[in-house]
Length: 107
Length: 116
Image (tube, rainbow over all chains, first blue to last red; front, side, top):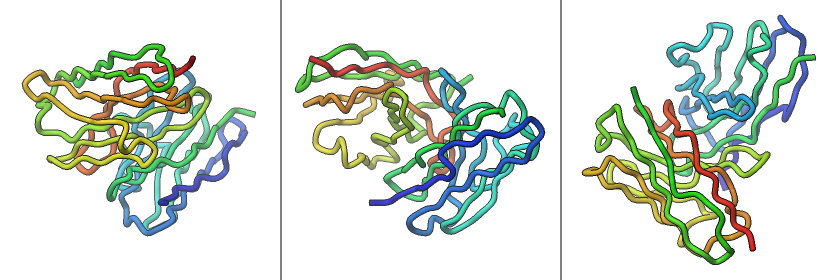
C-alpha cells in the first residue's frame, strides 16, 4: 500500500517561531504534492500544490519544497491564526493518499 | 463562486445503504474530475473515490461497496454506499479537483453515522 508519512504528528511552538513539517512518500511522486490546512471544526483549505506553488490568497509565510519522496511545509513566522492540523496529499495517480496530519499548537 | 453542497447523510444501521449527493454550482461541472473524501470523528482525511475523465477509482477500504457517479445534466455528484460498516462513520466531503488532482474546493460535508 502507498504511504504518506508526516512528522511530527503534533508540535507546539511560540508565536514568531519557524515551523517545519515533513511528509515522506513511500514511492517517488515527482512534485505531485499538495498541503492543506484544517482549522478546528472547519473544512480543509488548500495551501500549496505542485509541492511549492502557493494557492491564491495564502499568506506568504507559508512555503513548500521537495520532490520525489521528501517534502516540507514551512511556516516562517508562526501566528495564532495558524493553529490547525496540516495534511499532505499526493496526486500523481490514484489512490490520492493523504498523510496522517500534523497538529500545530501555540506554546 | 464555486459551491459544493452535500446532502444525504444520517444515521444508518450496519449493513444498510445510503446515497450521498453533492450539488455543484459556479463552474462547468462536467469539465472537472470530482472526489469524495471522508474524515472519521477526531481522525484525519481519507480519500474515498474519484471520477476523473471517465475513469473511476476507489480506496481499497470501500471497493465493491461504494459507487461514485455523476449526473452532468443536474450538476450533481453521488456516492452510493452499500453494506455500511461502523468504521464508515465519518463526515463525507465532496471535492472539486484542480488541474492535476489536488482539491482547491470542498463542500461543507455531510455526517454519516453507522450504528446499531
